[in-house]
Image 1 (spheres, rainbow, N blue to C red):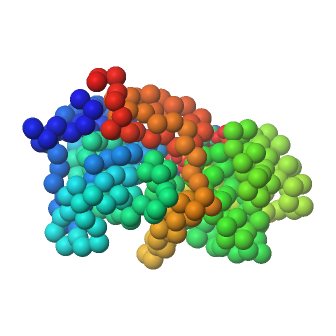
Image 2 (cartoon, protein in one colour):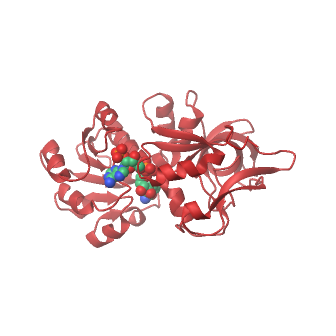
Image 3 (cartoon, helix red, strand yellow):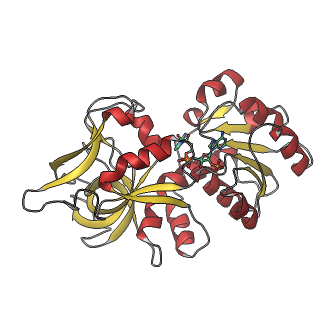
Length: 324
Ligand SMILES: NC(=O)c1ccc[n+]([C@@H]2O[C@H](COP(=O)([O-])OP(=O)(O)OC[C@H]3O[C@@H](n4cnc5c(N)ncnc54)[C@H](OP(=O)(O)O)[C@@H]3O)[C@@H](O)[C@H]2O)c1
């Protein structure tokens, strides 16, 4: 089976019934196709982006009713619209967010209910569109919290992550000076975009300070591996409030560094349409490391958990898998 089965009203989905290690609690199941409630739409999933955040949800981040699915980022073709939805119709290509918190399945499925969507701009490939939502949302939200000041230099620590790579581009597009720490995979592309790039790890304080000719004004930490905050504070001239981390929350609390969960979310700026259009125009990109049929979700999980995905990992439910 490579798609939903209209004769039985069922579909495949990857989901979990209890919290725990994703490799233990996630299973590919056959379930009824979900109906979109009011203010929701349902899509035939073309591509679903996976992210470390999915594994965190499996482990109990934002607990709620179970079972739940994985795959927050979705691009697909609308096949049903719920009550009160007037901006899209059946057959439209959209990208956005699966209703993972209120539905017993999410984007890693043949069909998905979405609670936030935008039309895919002309010229944007559907797989590339699915790579955008969480990456753009996270990068933009945290940069906006730090402030888009073209007179400032920002260090993006971990710019080889999809979020860091996006953040470096967004900061550059907003006119900021960008220094990036990254591995070899994306260092040349970051340099070509206009960032100054150095390796993360030993000697980072000296290298960044030398490149910048002094402390950096701002630091965004997107590295998936913690432990760098003391160095990043030094890079920011010793001021922990000039550093914002999206990953190293325990250390942030100890060191007085800003973190995701203590930023003001009351008035978020919606950046996805702008960066979707820039992606369609070839002016912004989230790199893709690999695509997999739905039944090969475990391979994507293993690559993601290695901390060296080197780009976005996406499931393509319409692609034939090993089961057919
Ligand atoms: N707080 C939030 O709102 C939020 C939301 C979403 C995700 N996150 C978190 O943000 C992090 C990044 O997410 P992502 O999906 O963009 O990750 P990702 O692309 O899967 O990150 C993998 C990349 O991390 C880099 N890396 C590995 N070890 C590193 C180290 N010690 N220092 C710096 N970079 C290192 C590697 O790039 P190189 O080739 O450069 O080594 C690798 O390709 C994850 O930890 C995720 O859980 C937070």
